[in-house]
Length: 417
Ligand code: HGY
Ligand code: MN
Ligand code: MN
Image (cartoon, rainbow, N blue to C red; front, side):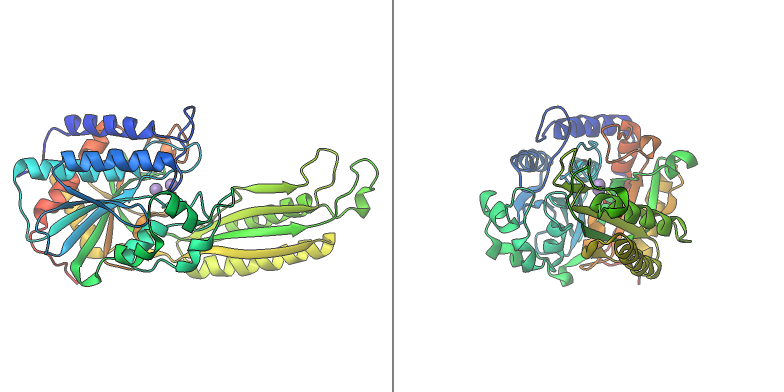
C-alpha cells in the first residue's frame, strides 16, 4: 500500500505550507487575499512552485486557476482542488488546506512510483469566496465551462471591472473559453476542505464525507429614505433608511429561524449614507446571504422576505429594491465517490462522518462539469472565516493519506452509476 503511514510528518509539511501561504496577504496584520490581486499572484506563484517540486507540470488559465498535471497527458482526468482566495480577516485553512493536501498527496504518489490509467490535475481556484466582485465561483465556473461573459463588467469596491483586473493580472478575457475542460475527458472532482462547522469535533472524528452542499442566495437590498437633521425632525415624521433596513434584517432572521430545514441568514455588509453622526440616514445598502439544504424552502423564504421588506418600507415611507446577484442550487455529492472516500478513510482506521455542507464550495460549480466528492477535515471549535480557524497537523496528515488511499483504490477511470 502506497498510502503513507506517517500522518504526523505529512501533517507537519501541510502545516508549514499553510503558514507560508497564510503570510501572503493584503496587509500584514491579518489575512486578506482577494481575487486577481498582487497577493493572489504571490500565492499562485508559491502554489505553482510546490506543484513543480511535487513533480507536476504546471499551467495557469485565464482566470488565474493554477493547475498541476500528473500522469498520462491524453488520458481522462481526475480533478482535485480547492481555492486560495480568502475572505477579509480570514483563517489560513479555508480553501488552502485542500490545495496543499492535493499537492502532498500527488507528491506521495510520485515518490511511491504509483501509476494509474488516468491523469490527475490539482486545481488552485482564485475566486471561490466572491469577496472582491459581486459574483462567486467564477474561476471554477470557467473550468466547468459556464462562466458568464457578462460578469466581466462587474466592478469591485474601487470601481475596477473583472475584465480590467484580469488584464492587470496579465490575462486575456478572450482566453476564458479555453479554460473549460471537455466533460468527456473528466472523470470526477474531489475536494478536501475544513468542515467549517462543529460536527466532526463533536463526533470525535477527524474526517467526514459530504453528502450535499447547501444551496445559497446572495441579495443586495437598497433602502431609500429622507436625510434630515438629527436634532430637529420628530421621530414620527422621519423616513429613516437605516431603521427600515434594521427591521428588514430582523425579518430575514425571523424567517430563517422559522424554517424546518436548518436555514441560515446573514446580513454581512451594511453601507449607510450619508454616514454623518447628526444626519438621519437617507440610503442604506445591505447584503443578505441565505442558505438551506432545501432549494424549495430557500426560494419560499426569498418570496417571504421580499413581501416583508415591502411591508416595512410602506409603513415607514421608504423605498426598497432587492436584487439577487448570486444563486446556486443545492448540489448532491456523487454516491460512488462518497463510498470510495468512506472506504479510503476506513482503511486508515477511522469512521468518516457523512454530513451536508452548509458552506459553499467550488464543488458546486464543478458539479456542472462532472460528479463531485468532498472530504471534510475537523476544525477546532468549528470556527472559520476567522483568524482563529485551525486544523491540526495530525488531521491534515490523515486527509492527505485519505486522498492517496482514494487514488490507490481508484483503479479504473470510471465511476459506478
Ligand atoms: O460562503 C461560503 O460558504 C464560502 O466560504 N464561500
Ligand atoms: Mn470560505
Ligand atoms: Mn472554502
